[in-house]
Length: 409
Image (cartoon, rainbow, N blue to C red; front, top):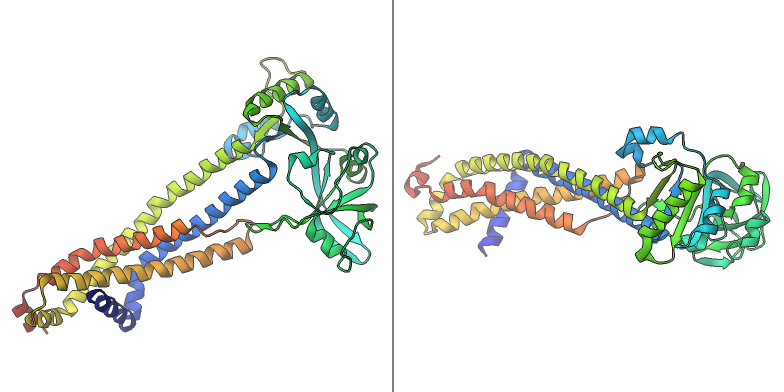
């Protein structure tokens, strides 16, 4: 019962002194808002990176001309890698013939282009050129039709597998677009398959793509530029051996001397997760002291306001003590008020933080997801702030002499 009374008194104080209450809780609001907004964005990015790795598979690694991650981790190495030679379809065929640890060696490239079917157009579609084993290297379940075959790639057939949304928008009146014509880069391609709805992953639409044979892609967009070579291992436990074998063979292929710098880059899902894990830990590490300062300042302001409240209600405390209220009851009342005020600030900060993260995800590529543990952490922190910084004002109120308190005006 005393708890409910204390909460009601605290809420009445909120309504009676709106501006003072807002200024009191501003530190808690800003601190909690910052935690929730940043954690929601980082947590969303964590889930997105994990989903990308899951889609490609943990048994797949990639050989590329340039490692884009080095732009952040080793800029000098990134600049040096700009002189690396392009990776070609001949490199892929050479590796596929010689690798013993791989169950599939594929090549892929992509560009953005507009697709047309009659009067309908889909702008900015990601058109991917692939080899026939792309279905082993990534998870692409079909809704209709079939995937590309070895014969499609060898003969450069102008056939295409569409993403769910692309097929729906190009053929809105057809439940089955198989066999229909799509114009890509001025050439007509026949639809042979439609991939199932892949949904959205942290704001990224996974249904806006078209897949064509790599050889047909070359005819439309040209064979210039480097390919990405994707390799799936036969046995996940021998992933390291497969990477070593691919590295060794590529060095032979490019005629590199034993001590010469590698002119290609090898990346895997575990490296991506490791690098991203380091980045997210650094962000979390920087966030803690920054938010801690804000919350401590908010706690000090809260303590000052509670001291003012004790002064304003000195006579009330004297009356309650004269009527038989015990010291612990007075201390409990003011402590509950302090915690309630702090928690209200925390809840407002959580709502604003979630709204801010959602807005940022709408206007930027940053994904957004709610981490339940961050909500619990936000409320728990504001509870502790209210309890710690409310203890002294509550103790001071409980220690007031009833006679002196009754004389107070």
